[in-house]
Image (cartoon, rainbow, N blue to C red):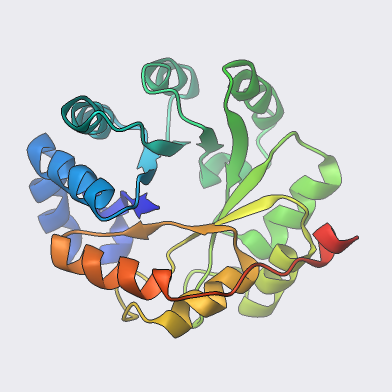
Amino acid sequence: MLGTSPFIGAAQFGRKSHEYRMKFFYNEENMKELFIKSAELGVKAVQLIAYEPLVRALKKAEEETGEDFFIAATIPVKFERCLSMLEGIQPEIIAIHAMFCDALDERIGRWARKIREMGASPAAATHIPGETIPEIDDIGYDFDFYLAPLNPVGYAMLPDFESTLRALENTEKGIIAIKPLAAGKLTPKKEVFDFIFMYADAVSVGITSEEEMKETYSAASRSTVRRRSVGRER
């Protein structure tokens, strides 16, 4: 999936965060062009953070190309407002932000039901996958997917690398990997994606240029590894 964290200038990009936010968040044309280029290169799936400029840019890309993108949206704040905004683009997956899921906010069960009632698959985003995934699985909240940090160097995989991999192996839910290139610290290579696809069903990669897109998609497409899951085998 084409990830959109750079489009909002997410903090993990350090000094580049402000540059990315000015280039994309405040310039919908630049975001639209990358959505279109991604479709031209064969990737018509977007992990969309639900802010109005990003939603508008994706709508424009769909209108100009006639493409229907597969959308996995993440609601960052103001659940009801964002859910209403997303109705116009009909996401296949809608994730609740990690700030709520990692805290086991009492509202996430109700929000998951609202997402399903809208016709989308509910997902939980987490920044502490090694703890949050087994906790949510044990509680039995109605989620179909987890969005979790996953990369071969353990970047942002909390509380630690081993517990994260164990949680990803044992859950029966679908996994969408985020931060796969460790916020730009890793070069997109087949070996990186081979590792990720042992534990994940899909991967979202934040991309800021056509050149990055070609390099990343080419590396990902060469991987033939498919997820192994103890939980699913049971």
